[in-house]
Image 1: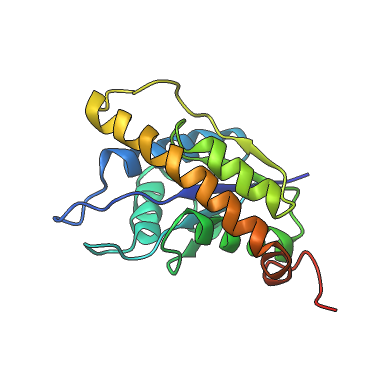
Image 2: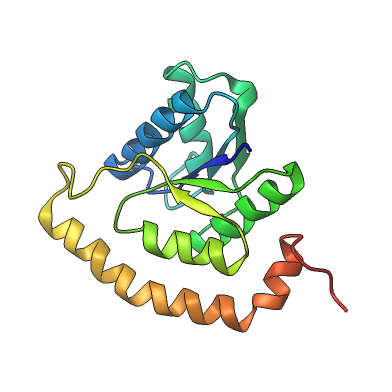
Length: 175
């Protein structure tokens, strides 16, 4: 069955260009899209400190890679990883898809997959490179440190609000 290819947002530079993280995540999605030409591509990320939205920038990069616009779905409202997962889960359920192919950095994947599991969505890793992939060591270590804090925080939030989030994503109906 078909899965949604889900690209997780990352910073947009002050000049409106993709940060290295955002460009890398789109490259992973392009590889996934070429391997699964029937899969829709869910671009998730709103406007951060600098415009345009992360999702619209992803769509532009996908178009440059000759991915048909008809495959691209924009989520320009999500502001963080949990909101990205909630929006993608809604889309996956609404479209009757089998799950997600998560396109993000390797340090981010465990949290993304945990959140999808908590919302009862099967998520597999996209074609993600291991290691720093040319990223500055300090930045990479900082992102790992951020995940050490974010993982238990997001797990607590999603478990505390699980019933509400499942209802919100269409997995369960309120009593």
